[in-house]
Length: 162
Image (cartoon, rainbow, N blue to C red):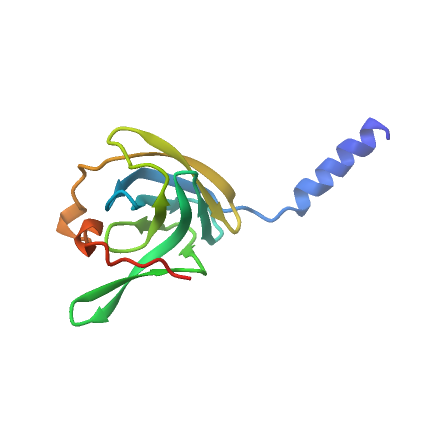
């Protein structure tokens, strides 16, 4: 092939790709409820003009990694559930993964989380693709503004979804 055909082909491919959402991950951190489970929290900002969706997360720190949220079951009972469809990240908005709400759940930790250490977390978006985030472990951070349920308050009653 001649170089001009390669350049023309590459230019054509670039124009055929839809505009991707511009995702910025801010203030990630992880905590552990116990030696078997933990969670990651962060702010996900979509600075682009197109909506996106966080559809998956992967890390080597546990046997299972899932996107979770808390569902109010009534009578003061909160249940953690797997969110298979992921989390919408509208254009120009920020979505909080926060304690007591949406979060990345790690089940079957391979080793206990250690204060000050960090690990790689791959966030998978429908449009933006994969973004690898370095997540520091912060076992001492308090919930913002007193909100959020402590994962440790579940007394081991958490059951992973199927």
